[in-house]
Image (cartoon, rainbow, N blue to C red; front, side):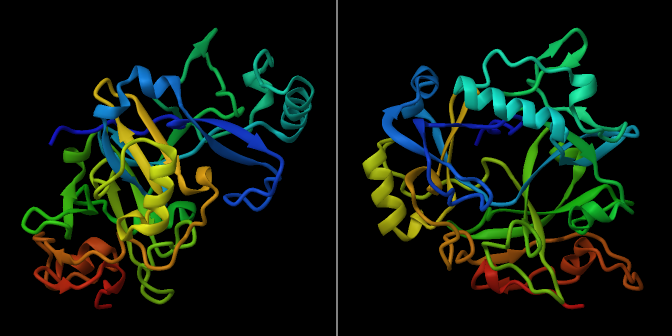
Length: 324
C-alpha cells in the first residue's frame, strides 16, 4: 500500500461546518460547538473524496520523525500560540468581524517563546522571514524529544535512544483485522508523522496499560484503515458511528490521491467520544518485537520490555501488559 499523507497542518472537516453557540463536547472550556452540515466541503470535492482511502482517526498526540543532530529523531507537536495580550486582541477582532480574516499579527511580539530547536511544520507560510499563523492564531510546529525532558517523558518511553529505534503499533502482516507490536528503526520512519497513544495521553480512550505499568505506542498516520466505511454522506456516516461495531472510532481521515487530507470527528456529528470499548482496543495483537536486547540490560524503556516478550499474543489491544 502506498504511504499515505503526513499530518503537518490542521485537517479540514470533509463537510462544510457551522458554529453553534452551545457547550463543546470536545473542549470543556469552549462555549461553542463546531458541527457538520450536509454539504460536502469544496476542498474534499476538488480532491475527489469519493476515491480517497478512509483511515481511522486516532486519539493521541501528533509526532514527526526527521533529522536532528545529524540522525533520525522523534519530534513532538508544539504549536506557537499567542501571548495573553495578543490573544485578547485576536478574540475581540473575531467577535467583532465574525472572522479572523484581515487580523494583523506581529509574530516577533505577539507569540509565546519556543525552544531554539523548534521548527515550523511543513506548509506553514512565511512573510518577511516569519511564519504566518493559521486562522486559529496558531503556528503549527515541532520540537525534538530530548531524553531527559520530563515534559515529553511518554514520548521518550517508546524510544531506544542508543539504537535510534521506536516501539510502534501497526496492522499485522499475517492476520487480517489484527495488530502487531514492533520495534522500528527511526530511519525507516523518516519524514512520517505518527500518533502517540497510550495510558497517559488524552485520557487513554483505548484503555491501554495502567498507572503502575503505563503502555504507549507510536502509530503511523494512515496505517489503520477504517473497516467497512460508508459513502461520504452525513446521514450514512452518522448511522455507521452509532450502530456499527466498526464505527467505534474517534473519526475518519480520508487520504486523497493528490495528498489532501480531510476528516470527520464524532463531535462534528454531535456524538460522544470516548465510547467505552473501541474498535482499535478490541483487536487481537501479536508482539513481533524481534530486537536484540542484552540479557543483562536493566532498561525500563518499552522497547526493551516488549523485546523480551517477543512472540506473546493478546486477544485484545487493551489487554496488553508487559513484565516489569
